[in-house]
Image (tube, rainbow, N blue to C red):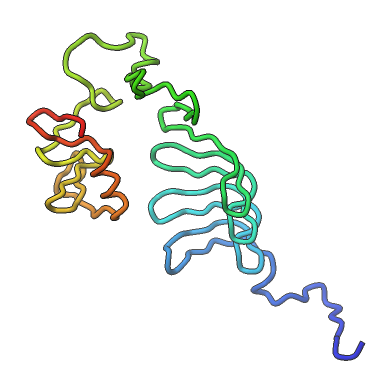
Amino acid sequence: MAGFARNTSSNFLHPKFQRSSAVRVMEYSQSKYEGTTEFGRFHGKGVLHLPDGYRYEGEFQNGEFHGRGTLFFPEGKLEGEWACGKQVEGTFTFSDGLEYAPTGWMYCTDANRQYYSESVSPWGILPTGELNYFDTGVNRVVPLGSYDAGNGIYTPSTGLVSAYNNPSETREPTEQEKEWIMKRAPKATTKDMSIH
């Protein structure tokens, strides 16, 4: 067979295309990957640290989530099975241990307005008094016209979210996050906070 040379070396692939184990920082996304690679892509078991603090631990194939893996969020974790980068099965568990059920959800619905913490509390629903707007049982002071974004106070006039415990610490939410806050987050409409 003319034109084909047989390589008898056991290491016939260029070094950058061989399977390896490494820690890599992606220059543009600022993500960090620890694990095996193949042909320069995530492949096998690894941990992907995303710049927003989220991380994925599990299996990769051809640079995508593939196989068993867990996505960790501040609010909880999503354990599941992935195929070609898409989740095909999984369970979300909130940081307080409550497992989300896509059907038959029992908390904060029209039929049952209890928070999870109220339903597992030995005291059940507390007697009348100040209404709880939050599962922690602590009502936050939200300035008139502002929204409680769940991770800070969103003020539409500035377009910023400020930290609960340090109002001078601010961040700019994404357009998608602003839209969600304006549509779903509790808004202070009077001196007492009311749901918008």
